[in-house]
Length: 284
Figure 1 (cartoon, rainbow, N blue to C red):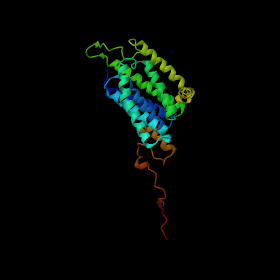
Figure 2 (cartoon, rainbow, N blue to C red; figure 1 turned 180 degrees about the horizontal axis):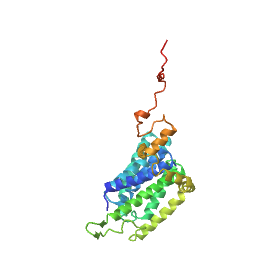
Figure 3 (cartoon, rainbow, N blue to C red; figure 1 turned 90 degrees about the vertical axis):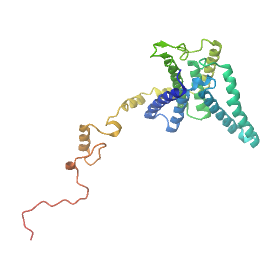
Figure 4 (cartoon, rainbow, N blue to C red; figure 1 turned 30 degrees about the horizontal axis):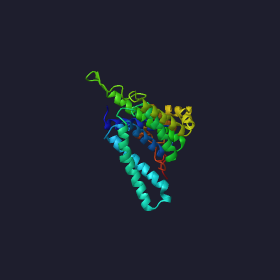
């Protein structure tokens, strides 16, 4: 299996590539794009949540503990005293970070149910629900975040399968086939529960139509295709001399990026006095 830094790097590259396309398509606001990209990075390490004493597991449960403790605090704060708010916040924080973390690892095995497609779908649907109902994002943004997380999740599974093949040693490790799978054959009851959870979460998600209409929009894909490669030179530097000449002929006074006009063709400065033509008539 790939190690934690590898999953982080590859997941960030995949999420960043998707974010670049989303930014070029101009379909969501930049502040929403940051949160959506983070969801993709989270998905790239999420399958290792069932790895006991792993950094992804500890980091994820710590983040969930902070999130749920403050969510409960902000929800019940108007009805509680300061002492009660302290107890509620600290109690929920410790319960999720240590109690739920310990219980979860007693019930799961690494590369089990969480290393499957149905777990990725359930996690994606949960992300859509959190973005829509908790973060109060539009339904299209929520579904985009779920899509980013699912792609990151599947990237993790594929990367683990790739690392199961020792190319230099010309052999396949025993772990091959245990990462990228639709469900866990060794734990059919757990897989059934995960599938039921995915279906239940799907019914709680907002409408899919806005997201579907956005990603299937022909003008959006046409705009992306037109922006795929630069037309006036890479990074604004014009390298085509014919293009430079056309620009100068259209507007001789306009500066051309990446080129300097020759001294002989430079236009005289505005307002400069021109010398009178020579005359053979002597001055009186």
